[in-house]
Length: 473
View: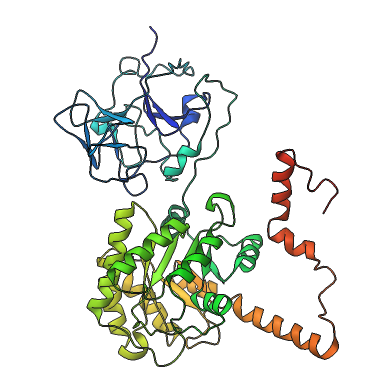
């Protein structure tokens, strides 16, 4: 007897007998499960249950109407307050599925051992659905659990005219925020993020091989505004720079970017908009602090902080905005209270921030290595990030030491800014005094341009039939 095939659709993917299949041509069912996981933080809060998406969308008493709790649900068209376009209710009013009317697709399943022949066509039950996604009806997950991706999975484009075993599917798009979240949760090694402040420094960090990068507020203020880190840079300045850095690689596929958000640039309403701006820019994570609006670099003297309730209000605004955006951007709560109010107050603030939904903490301005180690222990298992500023107010802690202490992320705010200052100043002085810059012979204009994507641009031109680079570069 021919197996019954149920075809449901989500964007450019089909759910076929509980498996995610790209619309372009077929691959064996076991290969079609492209490390894809639906979960309520990254797919518009739609959770597959018994093969249907049910979470934040419910069917009304009229089977063909669907009431959406979120007007921004992906792929839904609101009609008179109901989502009706790509989703219809099944006969069971509590279930919702994605329906493909045409074209009809013939599925030729790969031969498999007939170990469950009496149950092979059973519809998955509630028990068959795990947190890792849909199951095959026998309790075994058919979705890979580690890579969670997903709105971007619809980038798999093609037609459904045929299903052949020759099609090699593209890897599903994984948002940078999801990748950062997974690194923090699962990597046995500390994530080292050099501080970058412009496109060139970010390109160099990527080329060298860093798995994460950090957009420093001090560097952004100095490079973009020519000003000191005194709270002068505002949301527009920071978001513009972050958007450029996060998208240097196509689709934001470069190293996840953690960005400075200073104090949030205003009250709860402005903070919520700042979070939205960072999410749309492709920022993977950000830290927000408890200094007063007239803030300054964390390694200067004279810092003042707001009261704890105002600080927690900032954290709540971030968490609420993230939830409304259906994002999993990583929220890092930073406290600068150590200088004026002491270590105990810092731990109290970080614990409150953690309880309100922040994902990670920064205690800025450790006065000793022992204090840094104690902070990790006091906040465990909640992860901490270490901000390393050489020649700042804190002792020098190496990457190896920080990892041994238990820090999960380490950012180096002045890793590019300070060396750039030294090199540029020395070069300009040489030019002024000797009339030459003294650039090393191996550093040609092409060298710099290649770091900035010259070869990739040439490939695009050639692939589209262009001849802009046919005579070389």
